[in-house]
Image 1 (cartoon, rainbow, N blue to C red):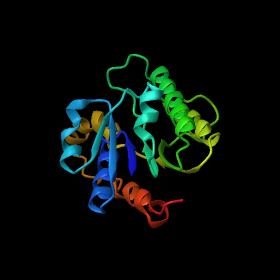
Image 2 (image 1 turned 90 degrees about the horizontal axis):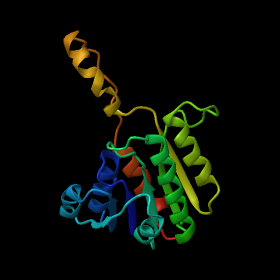
Image 3 (image 1 turned 90 degrees about the vertical axis):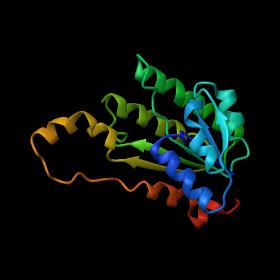
Image 4 (image 1 turned 60 degrees about the horizontal axis):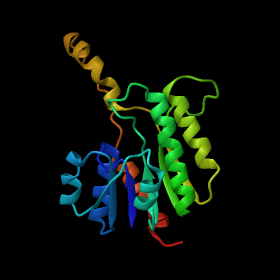
Length: 186
């Protein structure tokens, strides 16, 4: 079974869909029950979890052959950095408790920078904390998020910008997680 933390997002859903199409069981872990239906419709087991509840998170990822995680902060939060820190510590505690065999972590550009540069520094913390736990880990740093361009779209349209924006291939993450070496038992 594959556990996908953040399964309702674009990357999480793409991974879940690819794994289901390949015949693998998927436990979709999400916080918002309103986003569960598309995942249930493709055959995912649904686990509704507060990402800051390490015990519930450990239960949700227990017995997974591999866990994919993306830790986006809630759009309703007032303190994004603090929420991200709590989610990181909760996830690490859950991994330590369950002794997950394999983890695919979606990180972010800027995680390699040692000085505090805002949100990317949270991904640096995430990667550092992952480095302290046992098991196979694959960390993918995304270089671009299309959501980050949303605030610029009206200006680009008004200025008639026609340059094509690069678009990440969401399938890459799904392919990485379902790759032959990750789908075999340890």
